[in-house]
Length: 235
Image 1 (cartoon, rainbow, N blue to C red):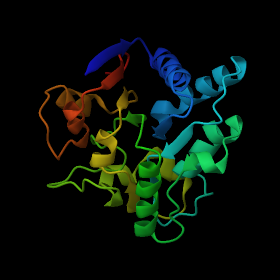
Image 2: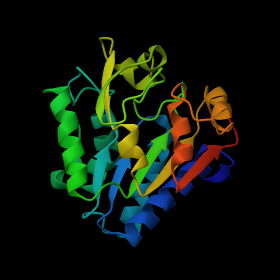
Image 3: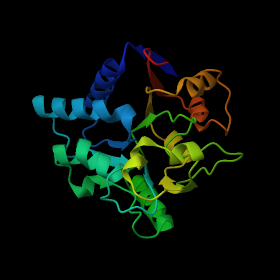
């Protein structure tokens, strides 16, 4: 695992943006899985800005949504769908054929099967961009006595139910859908972002290098190509 300390959120976001640009230059048909939320938000804005400024062709890249809340209309404020469309897909004009998303308005189990199938059709993920949850989760792989390895419907941890994105919703959300650790760890490369308040304890536990189902992020130690960017101003 490669660690890179960044002075602040701005520099972490700039590095992330450049990393994405480099991946697409190296492989214009890359399949890239994207997390949502505060950790990557600025990076996506900078990435879009640079794609346009440099006239980089991103039309052949396939973007994959990492996870989604269950039981919520996809176009509602606070969904991962709305986030990605606003921050990246719409500004870049990404075609629907180059976007893999959980359609949670139907059967959540069927949505998981479809996403798994579509990723497999494209030969797997070239890059998975992840953020560290305050409770140590990856996507919506939540701390538990045991973990589901495959893409699945997840019961949300109490701390996740208080996620900032969910504050925009009128009703409580207790479930989500997410890529499983098997799909995440099968990615050719992983970019792991650690930034934001309240994550110091989870990051400290991560740095012990002990793998535990109570800290799903610790499974990244089993991957051979992880770059961990951490914000020195909060970690």
